[in-house]
Amino acid sequence: MRTVTRRLALWRADLSDGVCAVPEELRDRSEMTVVLEHRWRGVSPIRASFPAELREDVEWQLTGLEWPDDMRPGVLVTVTWPVGKDQVAVRTTPLDEPVRVDGLDYFHEYDAKVVTREFDSGTSNRGKVLHAVRRSGRVFEDGSAALPVSAVAKEAGLGRGRRGTFLLDNALEQLTREGYLTRVTGSVDSSGYPSYPAVAGQKTAEMLFYAPMVEPVPAEGDDRAEHWVNGFVRKLPPGAHASEKQATLHGEPLEPGYTYVKRHHRS
Image (cartoon, rainbow, N blue to C red; front, side):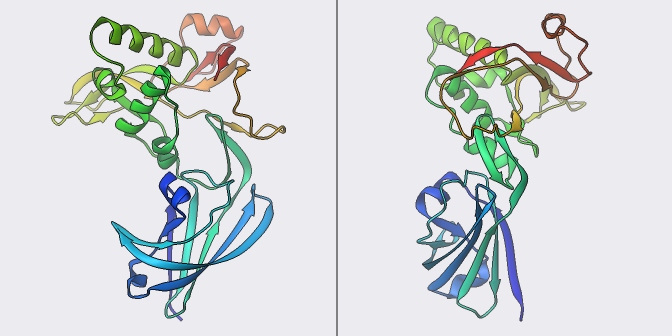
């Protein structure tokens, strides 16, 4: 029996609306049974069945699913359909070790690009700036992103004039201090599409570079409340180097391509 398989990342809307994209081969079917195979927090096995309807919304989707609340935007699922059957299997794959990506715990394999696009940065000024880089910038396979500095003010929507500049500068200072953003030199093509590192022959441009902070999940579990973050060593974008100040704060030599982020308060 022929089997159709598709692996895809779930977006925030998929999780909230209880839908899942499926192979186009299912388009002629109106109803299916979805069998979800999942491990809660990557450990406890769960098997659940849902009667689902098929609809077309940009692509073909199955509706009526109930996703476990330990699944985050960007989590990868494998959809398997034995052709001719009325049952579809949807499976997640646990990580060997769960990770925390910028404060949000992931227990299953995920698409780093979707995680970057879908992350909720909040409505604070710093959140709006970080949102602009992650949503409007160029996102790379590892989840890092780059956006020309000249585009940040418009995309962040902090206002115009002196007040807007003041708010933007304050937000950028906080984000660079916390290690979320780094100022780098990249390039843009004739349409304004950014590249980092810079591409020969393109116009150079100052950019803000975001790199996700990926760390092991602490034993105490998911805690997103306001807290103090101890100083830590963080990888820099390609070609960037730690400043003399950061090396001094670290107190010992830093490996090339790494910097030190001092202890700070994060909300």
